Image 1: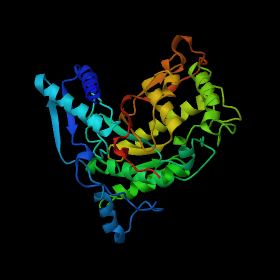
Image 2 (image 1 turned 90 degrees about the vertical axis):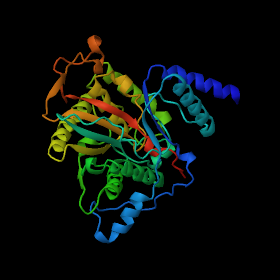
Image 3 (image 1 turned 120 degrees about the vertical axis):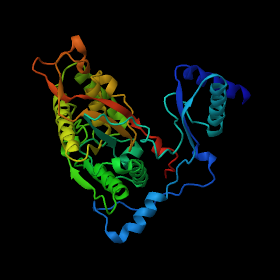
Image 4 (image 1 turned 60 degrees about the horizontal axis):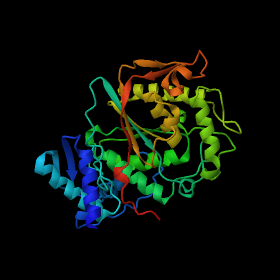
Length: 370
């Protein structure tokens, strides 16, 4: 055990040489109270009646969070050594907590969005989320755009955590939630709305079918992921090489169709955020989110396919509020750069901006799944 502690400390120190500040929060395991799980069911209405106010306030307060923090700690000399040793001991105690030099990745951090940088004055903010877990997710089966299961009990707990994390933004929390036409997205959105709304802040839920999951065709849908993965990766590989007219086995969308609706969705969300307080929430799907993030960063699509997207994770995008766009042409990095096989008329108009955070999931730690 002593050797393990020393090894973890040395690895952590080697990574921390390149950072000058660190945010540390007391791990949840160090607190005496156990966090109860919420028990509210999925609401079928976006607006909560006044009679539910006490239950709503109870839901919002029943999840405890760390109460001690040291912000902006400088790690120099003996302070650095002391902190690394503490981190190593925490890793041993928790068994599986990874040490990250860029953020204090402690379990169960419902304030995980409060360390985001301020939104630039010339930008709007998009909180792009994934839906809660379904039985297909739990069983490792493809659901795509043609299989439409509801979220399960685990997914409901995840959606409550997502809503609570967004609610911590207080007056900066969006009042507009977009979801796809698929049930798992709309149910997640309804659960989130129940958490973040109050009497002074009604929440609008709006269906936006263009943020639905990528349609890989009838052959992949409903199959075990282990059976369908090869075909899906071949489709992604074709698109990544510029063959954007390719479709998955059994029909489905072409790469060009997917990327064009992503570009259209982004431009629409910028407009809506600009007209509704400067931010919106969009609850979408894993493969759609992966392609969108690759498009936004113009990174090779085959790399985008590997971006992690946990159920009810949060991605954050800051996009220019004036609607200015940049053009991705046939030789963009997304489609293979100079070696791309994309047709000469390929063009995507993407809002100017940047991806601020990917796959935020600290709010989901320590969920007790059934």
